[in-house]
Image 1: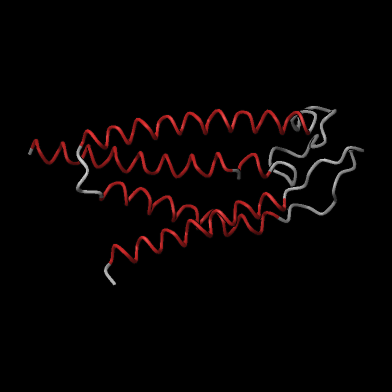
Image 2: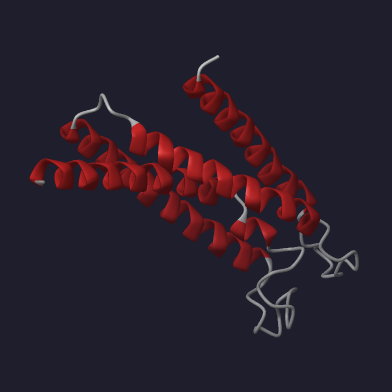
Amino acid sequence: MDVIKIRIIGAFILLFISASSFYLIDLMTFEPRPNGVISGNGNPAIIIMFIAIPVYAMLLGMISMFFYNVKKVTRIKKGLIIFFISLLLIFCILGEINEVKWHLDTLNGGPNNPNSIIYRWGWFNQYTNTIYFNVYSFVFGIALSGMLGCIISIKKNREGQQA
């Protein structure tokens, strides 16, 4: 088996583990209760985060290197890829903004609001995990890594042509 196939298989494994980790974090994030009672169970999703973050970082590195090493794609095609990735990034940013607004509405405000369920808890707790670990942040990281790989590849090729 050649190196490229091994890298692709490795990337798919990391993608699966990362997506599963993000999903588990979502499952372990507590929903606010209508009666305002706070869960005293702490933040069990933090255990999954210790796995999710390094695996996701490795996945992003592999995706960036994949886009950087694509040799048969012209600079114009890479420009089009960057354009479409930019649209995807905008979509993810808007989705993330809506996600945060939804959480703030559900929690009755942020940690500085006395009416909030998370009053004095800070922004990172068992009710806010999915502000950081959601489909929008997941796709955003992947798209940004691909875009950076393309940009660095184009820049390297330009410098190589000038020398």
